[in-house]
Image 1 (cartoon, rainbow, N blue to C red):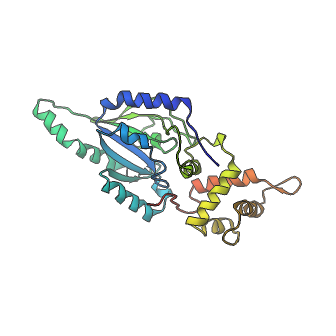
Image 2: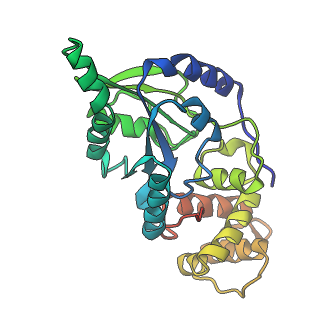
Image 3: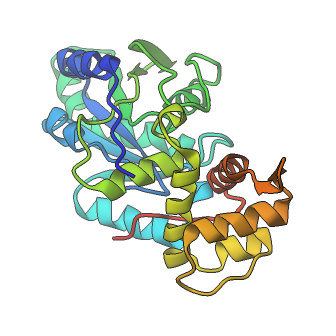
Length: 281
């Protein structure tokens, strides 16, 4: 399965980000903790090359805890401030403002010496679709300021949000990059919901997911669905076993592969197969 998804509004979003980057001091980039490298838009590094940076490893509650720590160390070694966040329950949220303020400390003091009494921290918040930006912003602001949803592409326009008196965020729509050079990146983004599900064959995607899980967490599928199979069993056969176990049978005694696939993908995204990280350092 070769996955590419770059709808027209993303070109407009990239242009808007380029036009507004001069208005902020900090770029806060949200990554999916389950796929920190695959969910990192390579174009952001160029866009934010002269800005202070904070990387948020969001959805940390869904990811393998030890591997998330390894990724956090990796990004810190590259010079990024990094925070693990669960934007649903608020874990890590309170760390963001103090870090942003500390990154601005030198500039704030310099401007105060020049007579500026009030110096707000302004940050642009960026990330791929469905990584949780709007949920994070609402948690930071303590109220529903940004539209949220469980499908990719909910946010469509920029908006300034005052999180507190001296902290403002420029929210931007989720943006991918025009072409995934690595097929595996596209797959991992589809597994985690960053690609619009409507353009994907869910049964084929589920088979690819089974192959990944059998390599990285070989007991995850077996434990969740109560099935047994030998290493190297074709993923389509595994999907059939799951469908039989769950009783997803259509007329004619055929397995309902789409329903089985949709359940597998949904339960993976909800961490019902365990805390799983797809990217390794």
